[in-house]
Length: 338
Image (cartoon, rainbow, N blue to C red; front, side, top):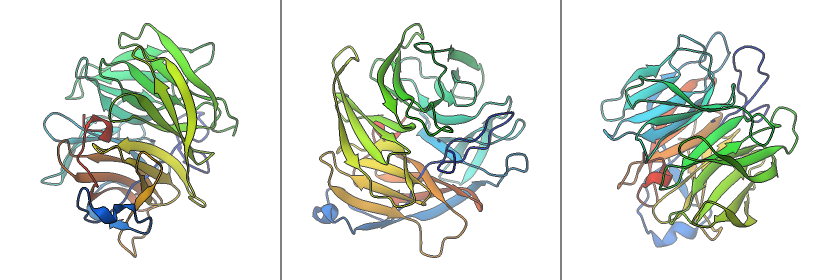
């Protein structure tokens, strides 16, 4: 979610700058043999505008799309001030929305539903916390707060394993441009926090592969994606750089993975998304319609569980929008399927 000149996040109070992310598309058939063509374009179509720039923060930034059990899409507005919708539920069929949460000064940068307790978990970048709430937006609780290995977190994106343990990209050092970022694992009861990888340059997107054998994570200020292989207890057995993204002035944001293992890499600084297979081959680029104005970043995507309809969160001076396209394969939990 949701970053400095890179992914600007005008938050409340004394917080300096923070985060932005990406998406885009056109119709594609799952399993298409032409899908390895790096020039293939998936042209996205506009669904609706959800937000406009806020007077207090000067911007809007949509992030964290995730489907709930009723098939509604839940998104967060990272820069929404207190009193304006921070967590929004969208009925994509009739193109209506309603706020789930508007209170407090949190800067929510991602959202995911836990497979353990079914609650909605949110990363609060501004306060270094993980909070949870009931699917209807009520019963807000602080799940985790405080330092990890002596350092305060700036949690950005979030993924769950099958048992409900949390895996976070901790974008420490973002505003200073230093490689202090980490990948952190938090047990599902919130009692144990472990650093799985450190020395990272503003880690952002994070997602499991299709078999939950390892984690993909991106580094915003290095434009690369790495892979952490894990054992059955969530411990790292190996780590390597998997992709180097040629994005020009744009930067790597959030990540989603479809049922075939394809990675959908959001771009901050360009309203588009790069799609790769698990072996690093560029399969396609998701783009907005030609002539789209006032949109700067495509932060993240959610693919309908069991279907190929995908929804992008796209933001810029024109506001925060949802766009849709047909993904290359079906949606699963790693595709923000809830």
